[in-house]
Length: 92
Image (cartoon, helix red, strand yellow):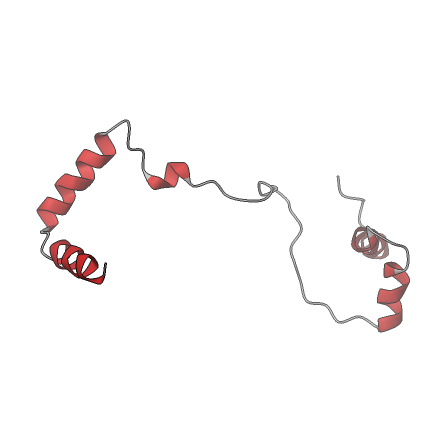
């Protein structure tokens, strides 16, 4: 296997720019061979237009525990409390 890899890398190094361009053009023109970018799908949710941004914030431990003690969704409730303290309307 190592020998085959060495030969393949040697052959790849010997390809001229013109040959590489011709191979690429043929590959792009082949309907049965879409570019890899079209095949790769991103994981996770699609990005929101006005999504939240992660930040590092230092808070007093008792403040964090107060919100965490209220159970799942504590970060959203903390965000809502900060919006209210800042005099901002609730998002959404």
